[in-house]
Image (tube, rainbow, N blue to C red):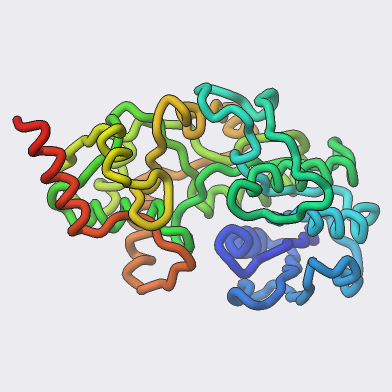
Length: 333
């Protein structure tokens, strides 16, 4: 297969290119060239996708595209330049496209989406991220048709080279041991996907020319099992102290990500459906998540190399100790 990857030098795009090369495919990566190197063996084309004519340098024929674009204009430019030449398109969208985050067990095939961004808006940051991804999906479907497009609505992508620090926080914290603040309840649903497993599946669906919409994420498990799986992978036996979400909110702890946050924790019931999606369709179509302990072990090994992150998530150890002391003072015994 001759595969075109938009991206290829950072995290998921790089993992896709590496897996495709290992599978014996001919890989061309289109990148700005500012965020890292593409895997050895991949052809590199430097292009600024803000420029509609930037893809003119792509010569020859390709069997499939895998695109991780965030901005609708980038998808529109690609479809206009290449839509007639390439028979199959895989677009990495996001579970952030969904309008209902509160209902557990929803499926990609019939879950309602957010409204797309107005055409004149091309911003994919902040609150615009979900609507921007909807617009990207629409641009692809309108440009090449649903029979030639696969929409992979990825959930939380984790593992080595993750620049966000969300999953990494729990790997590093549990590896350190001691008393650990566990947010919410042990039965809260958790979902994620190892970047390498998602990359392998994206290449597979390109090979098979799968079409339709799927959630690219593993099946949910509860938070207690999630923390236990990470602890197993990093060979630690932490002491978990479960802290109620209302207390965390009152103490100004942020959910999900960012400064002074507890990553991968979301208030319920507002977000009861965000990490409890029914992914049976994706699993039946070949998505094969590896054991959580393996992801945790490999992530810890990567963290030991001292990577530089673009963003940071979590609370400091001092802040955690203060929060635990305040919680325990209010809940003695």
